Structures are given as C-alpha cells and as structure tokens.
Image 1 (cartoon, rainbow, N blue to C red):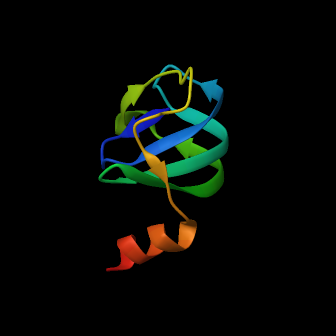
Image 2: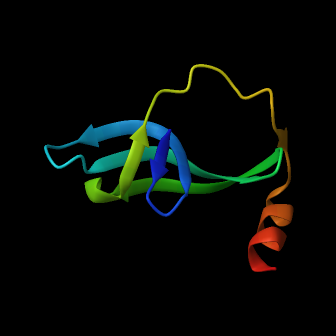
Length: 80
C-alpha cells in the first residue's frame, strides 16, 4: 500500500524501487474511501515518483472496518 502526497491510496505489487524512492507497482488499484465504504479502480502498472510518497507499507489482511461499493458508485462520488 502506498499513500501519496495528494491523499490517494494505491495498492499493488512492488516491482521496483530506486535510490530516489521512485516506485513501480504492478496490478495496482486505487482505493477510494468515503466514510466507512470504499471502492477500487483498476490502474494496472503504476509509476510513482519518490517525492510523492508519504507512506509505504505491506498489507497483511483485508480491512474489516469498511464496506466495498461498486465502481459506478465511486465514479458518482468523484464526479459530484
């Protein structure tokens, strides 16, 4: 899981990192939280510049505190 400076949360497989903390994530999803609900948007291969990384961590188990919603609901919330 990667938390970016603009508040986005990315979840994917870490494939590469360099001396500047630039990251390459594979099979990446962007997780959007609204209250206790969340939705995932598929992003694929994602390259993150190191200066935008706030937090990098490993996810051990799925969250039990949030409810999964559909992608159409996520787009509705983003566009409103």
